[in-house]
Each structure stands twice: as structure tokens, then as C-alpha cells.
Length: 87
Image 1 (cartoon, rainbow, N blue to C red):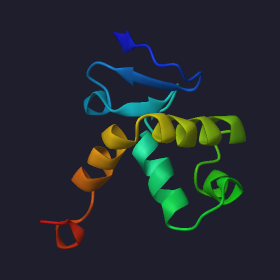
Image 2: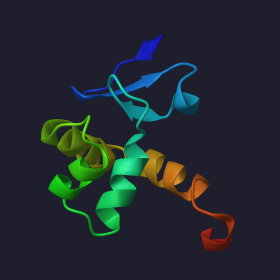
Image 3: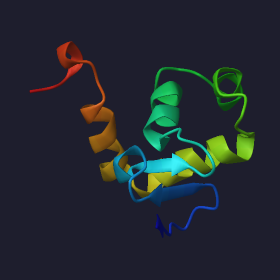
Image 4: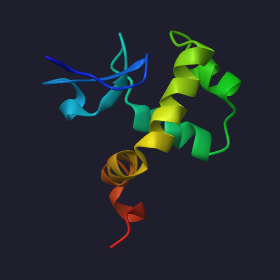
């Protein structure tokens, strides 16, 4: 069952990616796109790493992050390597 969001290219699906927000039609979590962007990649450079995406999908993922910052920050923290996690 898909959980509706107000973003055209982002969804949360029961049983997929731990019900984390993903890019529709993929298994790419929004937090992954945000992590790439925060590391300094431009949206165009993110496409080089994920050629199955479009700029619209990348920008929508970033917009979803802006609208749901607490949720995605939690996902980012949970997916950091142990040595980089804050106590």
C-alpha cells in the first residue's frame, strides 16, 4: 500500500525501504539524494550517479526533504557509518 505525499515523484510504500520515502518507481531513498546534495554534488552530478532519475525527480526529492526535514534527518542519521554517528 502506497502512502500519499504531496510530491509527485516521492512515495512511501509499506514493506519497501522500511517505509522510508523513495523516488517513485525506484528503490532510491530520498535520504540518499539529500546525502549526495549535502556532500556537494549538484543535481546534474547526482544524475550521473543515478541515470535512471530525471532532474524533476531529484528536485522533488530535495523539496520533500525541505518539507519533511525531521523525517529525512532521522533517516540520514540511521544510515551513517557507526564511526560518523553522533552520540
